[in-house]
Length: 63
Image 1 (cartoon, rainbow, N blue to C red):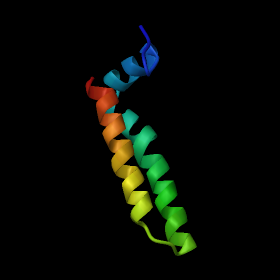
Image 2: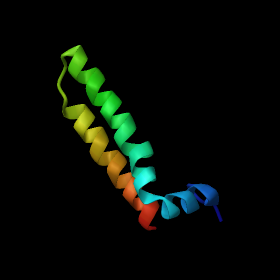
Image 3: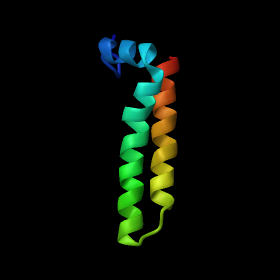
């Protein structure tokens, strides 16, 4: 039986869902979008990354 996430990570995600979303999603996507804006390139890849990370974090919390 193999699992994608270690059991302790899953437990932390369930116990602290807001912290999990902030650390795993908001922090990295904010940094990525800031870099994209400062570089003067299209922001769409940053928004796409945010959607993917939000979906992954929500799945981690709820499953």
